[in-house]
Length: 285
Image (cartoon, rainbow, N blue to C red):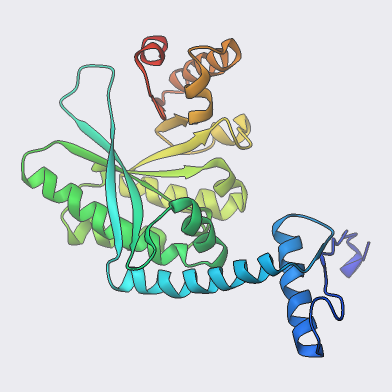
């Protein structure tokens, strides 16, 4: 432990190891490989890691993805898909969740599982979110002009939520495309808020003041803090798919889903169940 200004701080270290001559024949190569191994240890939350050629390939792939991702945003290689959200009650309103995909000119379809976490780590997620918001808001406004009562949900990352310029940029996009704020739902995870609760809550209040809807995504998999839930200016809870997929055959999952629905409704919140796949699960819901 170290004590900066009288505060006790426990610091963890990640060690990368490269051994001569197996991992390099000269100083510069060994240092580079040790550095790559150190970052592999950090990613894996390990105390140490020994260099492996697969680490090097992973590093090259990350560099390639980063370079390609910048080009993807600039040259509109990203594509938006819209997943329907079906209402169980009678309503003339339509709802869909925005899903971003990347059509790479040589790789083909790149899974969001590959590039979204990477974009979040590098901070480039802000550029992607801005692109998604601009296109999704424009599409929602176009549907409304065509007579479709469409509402669109957009995912917001932890980095996005802590961006002080997010509410202003979001408001400017709504105005530009003449899109009513109530037609747009911004989805965020609890962990995104708890990364920096004070700033996260302040941005949520500013977004709420604009008139958009706010939803807690993947509910049940993060902190699920009731203390924070009652303070958040949100309109909707989305139950994570891990509970929905198993609820028809797993009594524990069904109890969690039922309890979450009761909790949300008693707090005056709407509920969305993710990844509904079959008739039996629909009946249980």
